[in-house]
Length: 158
DNA sequence: GCCAACGTTGGC
DNA sequence: GCCAACGTTGGC
Image 1 (cartoon, rainbow, N blue to C red):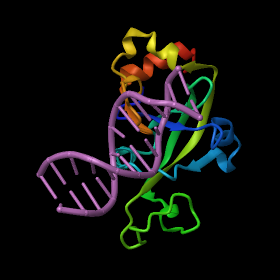
Image 2: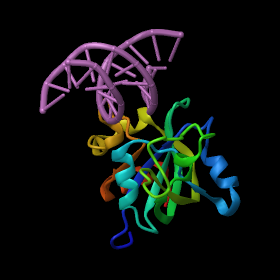
Image 3: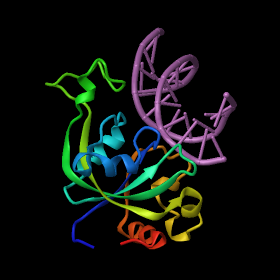
């Protein structure tokens, strides 16, 4: 593990944007727009280039961690907050007073076998994961280094 | 499609 | 500053 690097998990509905979509994106990179939760936004503001991200498919069958991405650009204003045509438009925001940020992430790998939520729950070492906490809905969340290592091992990935 | 859990809004 | 009403998330 690289010193100082941090670990995260980001949720996406695969019918909206899947890890396959990320892998097919230009430069295999996307901006993570649409986050409208302060806690999730604040976590994105803590992200540094090189931080590693578990890509999670929510509202999926089954919901699962499906691969890894990497932060390639730190937080900057999410343009969709100013866009009246956008589903994520926020009338309280102006370019001089933005409220919502996004980061850019780049595709790294898709696990050969994705790790379902059920499978993760079976692992005692992952008991404390934010993802597994009752009622947890955070779409951007921290992962500890220990949790990262356990999940990687379960996925048979590096 | 249901609904529990959670966050936000706005009246008071 | 409380809290009811409402909206959203996301597993099931």
